[in-house]
Amino acid sequence: MAEHETGQRVDDEGFVVDTENCEERERTHRERGTARPITVVGNPVLHRECKDVTEFDDELAKLIDDMFASQRAAEGVGLAANQIGVDLKVFVYDCQDDEGVRHVGVVCNPVLEDLPAERRVLDDSNEGCLSVPGAYAPLARPDYAVVHGQDAQGKPIKVRGTGYFARCLQHETDHLYGRLYIDRLSKRERKDVLRQMAEGTPRYETVPND
Image (cartoon, rainbow, N blue to C red; front, side):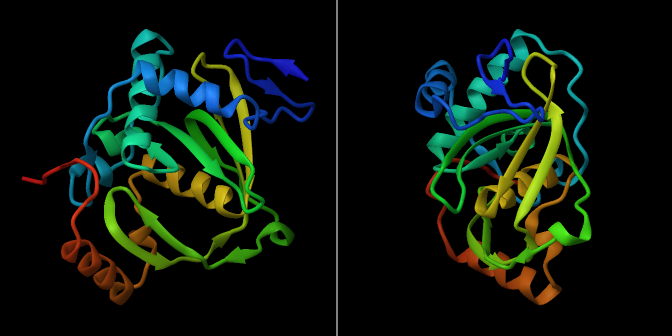
């Protein structure tokens, strides 16, 4: 096991060990950060590819802290930067897998690894999104995912997940390329999700679309 400057270990295959000291790491970020309102479907920043992170500096560190604070305030399990209006390829997560194991971390400039056919076992569980508040729909995604990217210091990392956590990794990476989960639905399913959203009231602060 090696160790990054962030204190997170990486295993012999180069995967971040994101299951250690989860409570302490999440709380440290969150307590330094400030919760921001969530952008919702229709906001232009959600519908275009974000810019690559090129400066791994104090400004990025502050953004990451705010993202953890915003994620907790909205009771989410993952949050992409454009969901708080920031045009950068970075997401944070605080998500359990199907075995109840908690994963906490951050990925900059994520790229999903193409899975070999034998690893593409689809799971059609319900999916929701903080940017589509109060709405859910079944969506088939692979139940295993590997994301390549960089940590907050710019060092290369890999993150892997199964089950619900794999869904989270795919969902948040999609966000940073301008794609919401409802973009993967049929027209009828998308219409139903938007109806659910319109009929509900967000339980957290959102940014109204002009």
